Image (cartoon, rainbow, N blue to C red):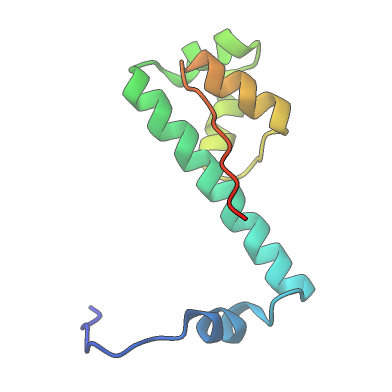
Length: 100
């Protein structure tokens, strides 16, 4: 159990200590794994909100249930074109926002 002692934490320093400094191979690998995990969570959350099964989503995109499972678990990261197909099959819109 972790107690919140109200100290300000420098999370960049925490990440540096655990995965290496930004730009190092170990940090890049950790960031890629994190992105795969986040992508899987986005897809899983959208699928559950759409109330469809992994098998149904797979059918809609011409894939198989095990592929959807691997994506949702962060094991496999879909190509961007596949991500768009998945999100479209779930009835989701993707918007871009750019601030300068």
